[in-house]
Image (cartoon, rainbow, N blue to C red; front, side, top):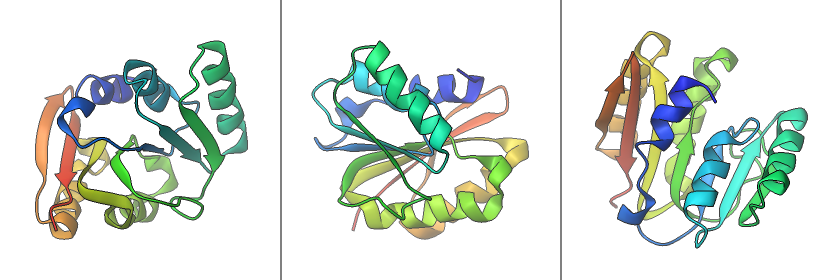
Length: 160
């Protein structure tokens, strides 16, 4: 697991948000969503990615770790995502470009329940300040809950 993902999972407390599903957006091979699904077995998790190999690995990792409260499926950002979530977590694929990261942030509000949270990890040098500004613009609020070795954990809450 990369350092940013580790910082993210160590700073997500799903006990502090309403009951409901959790979305791991851009799940890769599944380290964030699977760790949280194991930690919070009472919640249901959707893990999505556009990369078929990554999704196959996430499915295999779920099976190998006896994690059954996950649904792994293909989605280009929110294209195939339906329903509302209590939380969306992401370590966005910065190599895919700023436009994709911005789509992940701006689209999140349409998929969050009231009082649902978006939690994002980004390095300062890879756009954390601009992501923070965009999250503030979209949600009207954003907190930096952790800074660690250049990584920022940013959290916004849907309060409408």
